[in-house]
Length: 321
Image 1 (cartoon, rainbow, N blue to C red):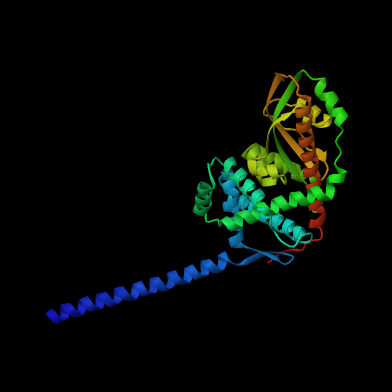
Image 2 (cartoon, rainbow, N blue to C red):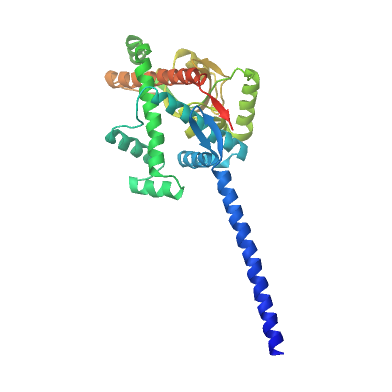
């Protein structure tokens, strides 16, 4: 009887061990399979590759800058992450055609890092490092991303600075003639249309997403402007910093409404009026003029940036693997 009981216990233990062994084996296979999927190449941009793991990291980075992206549908999140990283790879390729290294001066890099963590409400770099560590983003990868964007902006400035047109006298007249000024709180969606796309279909798609998902999410999905990461928000804009054509468009809008697409260099622009306020001003001409020059310079550089990107993209090989 004791021998029988012993044999039964041993048989049970052997079966249990065998089952555990099988489970462990299949778990190992699934893990290995998962890693192979995670690391498979899905796009090739000239000699730069993009893996599915890169897309996951890109999503984590984008969610750091704008957590609203996580509220979108999976296919939309995929498209945003894909387009973002492809855009970055193309910029990197173009930058390395002009310089030998993706690197900035240390002080400038530190200032860009501070600007980033301040925007998301963190107090210091230690808090920021903990935050990105929790998202499984390496600090070095983050620094490379902001460096690429900064070098791209520097390159655009050097290439197009002689084409910037600022009429200082006109700005001075506008400033001095205004005792009451309006300020507009605006959001934007900047988009372009590929040769294969139909403009009206693209407009209808954007309008449908604005209606169903809200303007901020539509900006995340469709906009090619840097403002997309903040849901298209431009903040408060003084009326003097807006050209007359767009000012006329804005003045036809009620709060909460958005405009029809307006043709701009490098694509199309949809503006949303979020709020408006009027104020009496005591003009500091020098300060106001410098501010307007800076705003208008940045507006023109953003347009040149889109134009240049669209131009070089035509010569880049984008291959889906």
